[in-house]
Image 1 (cartoon, rainbow, N blue to C red):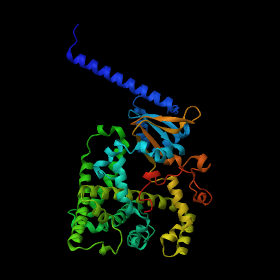
Image 2 (image 1 turned 90 degrees about the horizontal axis):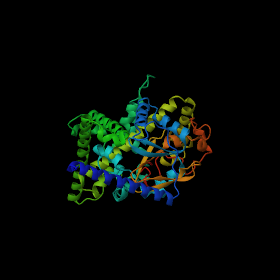
Image 3 (image 1 turned 120 degrees about the vertical axis):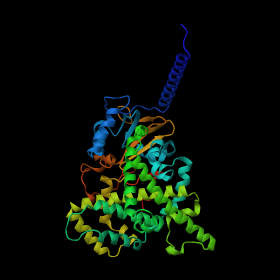
Image 4 (image 1 turned 180 degrees about the vertical axis):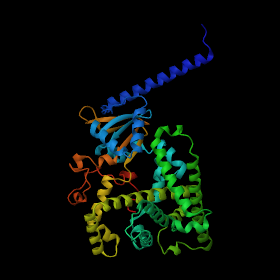
Length: 455
């Protein structure tokens, strides 16, 4: 019986696919034997092919604001390194310091941010440091590093105006107030002045919409980007969010306007033959200095929006958590207030010696890290040093294209590292405890450590 052309083509494709799969399987097997890899324990799942059950469980936990606690319970149940299927991909989850050191430092070149994160973030901030890999990342990191020199942010007088405005916005009559929105606006204004020397509120006369519209659009863009990140590999199957697209356009228009100001300022300096930045009395202005190195307005906009998003969101989140915890701990509040009054006018040296405050913030970042989960995608077949085999001491195989997930939230609550009271908020632990290497990740670690951590 003669085969039709479509049937023959389908058969050839199936044979090619089968041979490719077999070849990849043999390649992986040889690699694992060569490096003495053993599989880590697997999370028990009903759906071991696509991992739809885990995806639905994560979604329900996220809706109930319990996702991080649920992830921690899995580590307690399965082990400090385990594998699971999620959206068709096998992911290796780990809170093992040796594995974290491998991913973030020793085998840094084996792992990338990856296309999944890039695809989720690029509509909002485009190609910039937070989405770059390889030589592009090295280039951008070197370009941006001078902007985050500690000396640029050690002048506390610079922050005074924004802090005064924040304090004035808080009622003094004892009424209840939600501080989170105020902290969000405060962090945006502060980041804006640091990045391009203008608070958000001064943008009203030049922008054809109110500052509130810009701030709300930026906030919705951040929330929408977080949702896109959670979708992972399923993002292409999401229906198009036209409201998110519209908010991204508002964000881009806002960024374009600021960039044009910086480029015009650069042009005026060039035409007048003046060097430097006399108007800001020698203070480093991120965008103006970056414009000296970059002429592309889109790249300038991407770096600006990315730095503003990262700086404002993390700062607002940390402030909100700190004040929430202090509101339930009058003793801590009284102690910090007493030491602050003794300190007098704050200086960078004084704040670094403000022991109780540093212990308090360290403990906040331990229990409630501003970035609770880190993901890295292997750019080639590689390994992790621990977690495989029955005793967990063998190497774990990480195939090219698969993801390793580090959960700082769970790492910071390991009882064998932090003690039996690891779930308790106790700043006093920092008086005598120095975290083991790679067991405390408030700002990531390794070459990709947060570039703005001093800020």
